[in-house]
Length: 230
Image (cartoon, rainbow, N blue to C red; front, side, top):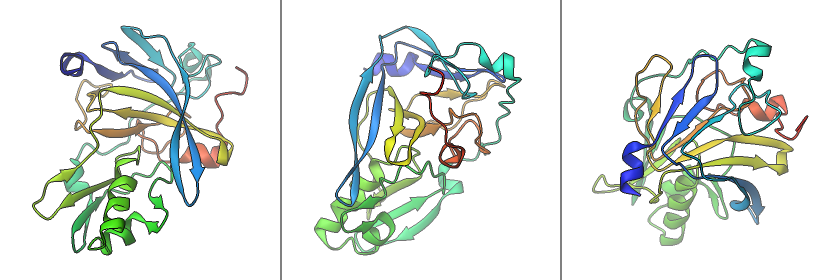
C-alpha cells in the first residue's frame, strides 16, 4: 500500500464535503462493548472508488456520502482546529515503563476503557506487563489519536495501519460516530494547507463539532444518526 499512501488524500472543501482521492478503502465499524472494554466489529463495506465525497454537514440522505444537502442547509464548515503539532498540544504523563501523550481531542469512542482501568491509570502502573499491554491497546484503538504511548527510549508505539477510512457506529449510545481515518492519510484544509499527518484521526460528520474538521464528540449530545431519513 506504500504507493497508495503517497497518492491518497482527504480534501476538506469549503462548507462542503470531504473529498477523498486515491482509492482509499471505505467500510463501517461498530463500537461494541466487550466486558469492561470495547472492540470494533465489522459493519458494511462500500465499493472501492478512486474518488468519493463524504458528508460532513450531517444532513445527507445518502450517508456516508454527500448528496448536496450542505448547500440546502447553508452549512458553515469553517475549520476551527489548531494547526499546531500534536507534540506541542499534548500533555505528557510519565509512567514506570510507558509514557503517555494526551492532546484531549476526545471522540467519546471509549477505547481508553480497558478491563483493568483507563489508559492513564494503566500507564501509571505500566511496570505490570498485563497493564502495560492494556495501555498500549487502549491507546492504539482510540480513533481520534488523542492518546499515544511511548516506551522509555522515546519510541512511539503505534498500530500499523494501511490507509483506510472507517465510518463508526455507536449503538450503545444510540448514535452514529465520526469518520475514523487510519494510516497517515494527508488531510488538506480548505485553504490548501495540510494538517500534521497522523496515523489516527477522527473527522466530524455530524456537522456540529466546535473543532472542525475533527470530531469533538458533539455527535453524542446531538443524538446524531446517519439512519434518519436514509
